[in-house]
Image (cartoon, rainbow, N blue to C red; front, top):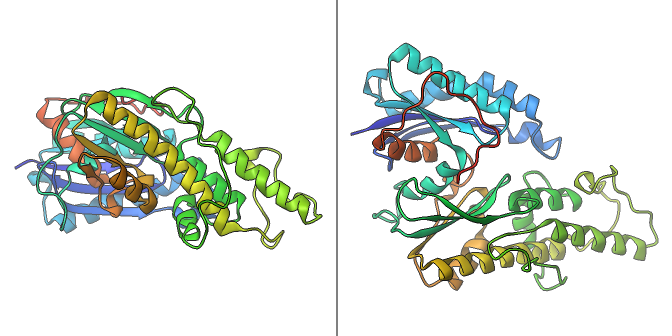
Length: 356
């Protein structure tokens, strides 16, 4: 049995996990920085890297203790070296290199996005007992990425398309901030949308871009324009802070907004675009499985609509493995390990690392 210690520090979660044979999670420790970054409405890179430095040792210690293993029980150590924030990635990569040098274990460098994909191979109570079947399409939707990936076999990735501007999770965060909702925006908008009417506002879905590409900047701007029109209708000055759209946000109590309807309409438009492009990719490439991965894969509206719309099996990770975590990286590391993929101590971080 192959036991791999995986380390994930690509953004604002410090995580370490031990995964056996790419499927069985023996432990997964996560130190979240959400509360720290909430006051800024998004991740503050310099603070994120400092927090990783404080949390990495306790996270690894906890992962090993929870797994009940000693260092000699491990087969390899893996770390994410891109994409992500450079300062954050450096903490995890350098810690992993130090461990491998001290323990004489193989080092595996990982792409953060393939970890999200391989979260769908992890076993959990009530989940599928078999592995996903190839060929498959994976929709990766997170704060930093929105991509459609075709896989014919393990570790074989073909990028069909992706966002040409904002990632889906980024759009959630920006619209949530615009509406005065808490960071992270995805869960906040989903909660608020439950009380709203998804047909209240007719928002664009940008389906005219490339066949497998997405665009969410126009959708985000449309929400801003509606808010501005509502503000003018109330005879008030537009109370946004900042001069850029990305910085726009409402002061609490600035105006009376149909926030629930706006949240529901925004979510419906974004989900509609994701579903339409994913269906096209499935049909065009005759895939037999659909995987959904990344933080936005936790959105229940997206899950419901994809499950209803597609005719092939749809796989989602459990919610706890949708956001950044090291367990998913341990699953990906197993297949890298089997392929003979090994990194040297010269492994460097690649903030813009592409999957394919």
